[in-house]
Length: 365
Image (tube, rainbow, N blue to C red; front, top):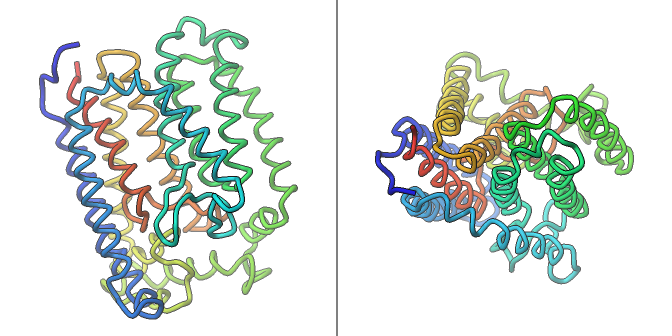
């Protein structure tokens, strides 16, 4: 394949950098009180976020200038490594428990989350597999079942941690790749019904998940327990009104809204910047998804097209779930807002993936 013949998508670069910049400002605003109370340093979280953002932007520019088809060769080894890490993280003494899930590898506050790496490795592998077997995707046994079995195995390992949120994002992005490859709607529809039944089983198997569902339906039934986060999130969004209380003026970050710099950072955005600020963030994400899908449509080969769909799908599914949770439209799942929430290694990994997407955009037909 010839070298890249054009500049990367400027709209995509601008939207990424703007979202990232807003994220840095909001991580500081949302975490300053918590940082000072816990570490005596109001800048503790934002300094770490800035470090990973710089590393991520550097990685993004490397992958943006690395021809994307090299990931096709690396897809199988990367997937196997991710499966190995998902097995290692389940071993007591090796995997680190945070937030009730054994989903981290590392020491103290430094670590990686293998399930985050699996999201990217899975869409890269599926893009390679389905681009080579596209003529078989319309058949269930030979075309659809193998990728679903691989995806299902990864989801099962992630659920053993357990981490339903990350597993859901991986499955959602993977299904978008499978659909874009030409899978039949009736096959996917039948599997969706089985998936709903399985999801109900997972919810019933863990009391805390059932509590989240009941809290989603009526959080005021348990305002100090399962419904607490949802109620405090709405208490943040409501007073924000049209223009917000002003940057840095959030009330909910004063130990009312748990972990305001991560899962519920959009609540602080809406509280401080109002409807206008929240809508602006959503518009930037819509631009990013639009340009990502445009890169997929204009890619010169099937692998590049499916890979662009997968990376864009990770962003779109994660944004949809996070904002849905924050505004009370979905149960609490523990999903962060891409590029905005405090994220560490996951932020660097996401920017690396966006660099791959930018490289694909350089080959637009």
